[in-house]
Image (tube, rainbow, N blue to C red):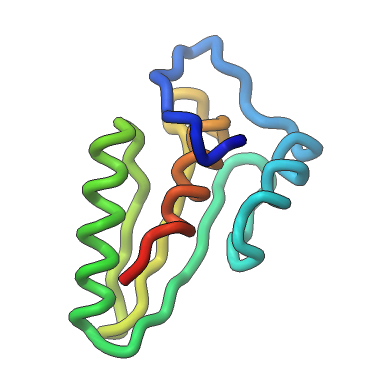
Length: 109
């Protein structure tokens, strides 16, 4: 199961997920996750107030640090957080992006 996996360092030889692979992986994610081809995976989260959005941002940051895989995190409009995932080294999406997205879906505020 993907939730029990951990991110592993990628090399330049790590393959980018195919669109078919990404389609299968997305079945394990919250339907709020969107993608731009096989290069970017993103989701926007809404919260009741700024503090909840900030708490979520901090939890995502701690999770990302523990997994060694770092998303772009945008806290905006006082109660929204947008997360963007990609694997820069391979210029596309890897299994690590899906692993982290799955774990972000489990964060409780």
